Picture 1 (cartoon, rainbow, N blue to C red):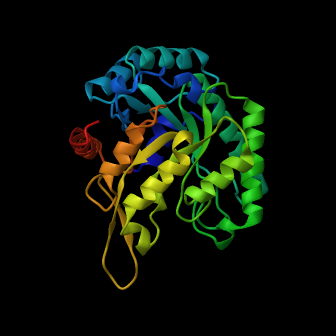
Picture 2: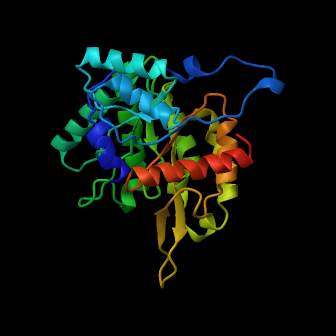
Length: 315
């Protein structure tokens, strides 16, 4: 079960919702440099019933997670939303993101309209839950794969459309604390630090933030051989805008053509020491969410691997 399937079942069913706490509202109070802690809120899917939301929130802490994917809830269920906020705040577990995984640039006008409506609901839900962000990909003009590659995914018309719908959704919902964010991708904008920075400036909305997935930026031979430089560039340019992150890794399968695959965090080419060190230094504490693994045992292994690197830094 990959992340998008998991979120559609347990979190992204939250396609009708309210808004999370803003970055500024969640930023810790300034402290003397000598006492500031370097820390990361790590999270992952939790395989536990959500019927009792207090037990579900407590399970995150039992597994030593301090961040969570959005539980299953709809925007109209205000009582459950209030219960979720209370339960997770009690356990000091940050809801990282509400995932809305659909094609905001669908070539079919009716599907595109419905997908954008669901995205607006997701933004409202994220704000109501106190999540850091709502997240989707920017979309694709590929007629077969909803998030697939297409040459025009980098064109000026595509860019202008993303700017337009991002502004429109933020202006419609008027989120007080949560952020509208697009996941960085390898074959659609935003695909690297400069393209994301250009998008931020064009959208020009305070509640537009960066959803950072560094593995998705690694789409060339040059990049996979020097992920340290890529990470430092991304944090230098985008660090203050980052609202949530995904944790996975990438490896090269050697054959006649370039073939990269996702692998367990810390077992591939991504420089996790630099990734975690730079992430921990951000004052807004963006959550780090493990994704795309097959089962609970793999998620627990990934969390242990990441925590081992944290201790070495230390974080």
